[in-house]
Length: 215
Image 1 (tube, one colour):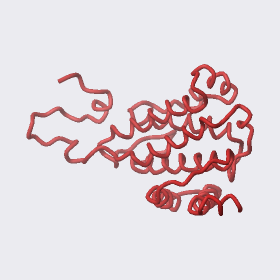
Image 2 (image 1 turned 90 degrees about the horizontal axis):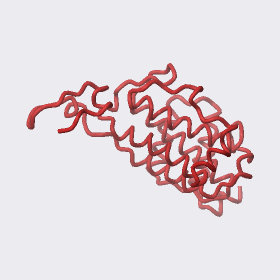
Image 3 (image 1 turned 30 degrees about the vertical axis):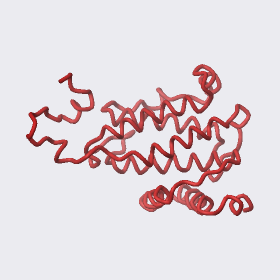
């Protein structure tokens, strides 16, 4: 058996012989990341349609423009992955800045979707390694459970996907199960601005595409 992973050491999970119970057994199975993976994959697919000129397009129901939302999404993904892997949150000093956006997209050669997909994959993989969804994590001074952090991540990715679809005139019709998950999250602790934006997104995505496009 190879050396313990950093995450395993962070959770202080002992290695035992076959048949013995472990903390993993008591805490349950790895977190189900299907919804988050599906939404972040949708975001990356939408970003493949985004051009430099789209960055300055106004966000729908949110402050700033698409470029601001893009940068915020990447930084949020990397911060979440860091804390789940037992590291300190990178903080603002480690964030991708708006001024580096164009050069970063060109540097990776895959367009805007490639840079975002890398950050989303790190986050989804980190959630998938969590064996206790009630484990406490500190995100920039706010302590939440891994499960609460996951619900926030799904909601944030959902809002970003909806914003991209609205701004770029792309279809976005998530599964009903994901919509229910977002509703549960938004009713928990959202401020008024996020609540209004999410309700609008849910109403529009629940309509047939032809109706939503018409108003």
